[in-house]
Image (cartoon, rainbow, N blue to C red; front, side, top):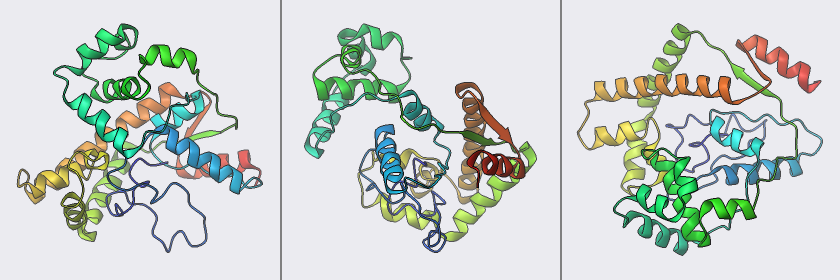
Amino acid sequence: MDSLSIYKDINIASAKPSLEERKNIKHYALDYLNIDEKNNAQIFKTLLEDAIRVCPKKILLIVGGSSFYLKSILEGLSEIPKPSKEQILKIEQEINALTNPYEFLKSIDPNTAFKIHYNDAYRIHKALEIFYLTHTPPSEYFKKNPKKPFEHAISLFALSINKDTLQNNIKKRTKNMLNLGLIEEIKALYTKYPKDSQPFKAIGVKESILYLEKRLTLGELEEAIFSNTMKLAKRQTTFNKTQFQNLCMGGIEEIKRAILKTSHF
């Protein structure tokens, strides 16, 4: 469950498993979306349910760092109509035309606006998408369409890695991505797809774009990716600790044993 690996053509920046690595182990939710398509928790939920249907007698591992999506799935999602590409384009135009999206949200749905910080552009945008798509204030829509809890039990595990090891791992990964051709990968995609495509905001991608625009040197690019990845890792750890109950945390070997014990392999 990775917000970047789900996209086609982003192989280096996402560090997704190679085709060779996927030969003996079936993977899901990889190479599913085009770069100009939007990603959300509902898509991951659908793909997860599809995988469960295909492998009813197998134990599946949900692997990745997109804990926000996982939390949304576990807590339950409301059914939202799937917009057509034409609708998506029209909604984007409507939202982009707003002088102050937060003030507009407050005017049409003060209850929802009260729960969102005025600088939280992502959640403001999502709320307005629901309004324009359903022609209903989000708070009213969710009252009529309550969340549906996820039907399957999921055991939760998280790796606990000391800071020095984490720093070394991220430095190695950053250097490896650059050596494998990260800049060339992003350059090819950035010239082909709309500049506001969702993956272009991801760590490793957005910094590469700044380099391509000559706003960063190569050394600054490497440092920016490292620094932003470290900050993300810290946020992920805090999120996991505070947002999930019954979370098993530990080192690699400890988590391996816990998974095997829980899964009864």
